Image 1 (cartoon, rainbow, N blue to C red):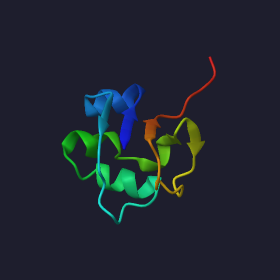
Image 2: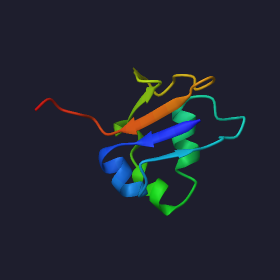
Image 3: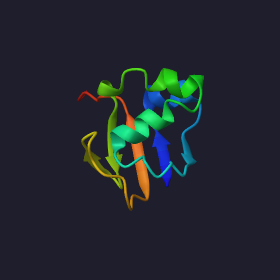
Image 4: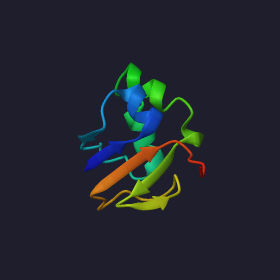
Length: 83
């Protein structure tokens, strides 16, 4: 699946997107964040406060407990404010 990173999440990881194949036990957005955070220091830094990270699956905002099965694209970004 394609994973995209936006704003300071992208800045902390150092890339805008990548294709990943998470392990079988990674079933939700929250699981994916946990797995990604184990992939190195930059990922751990980007996801150090998972409660503030927002996610979208195939362009639809989702909650951390959303299932990722069948997702083509998952995006991670910080909270946004109007402005």
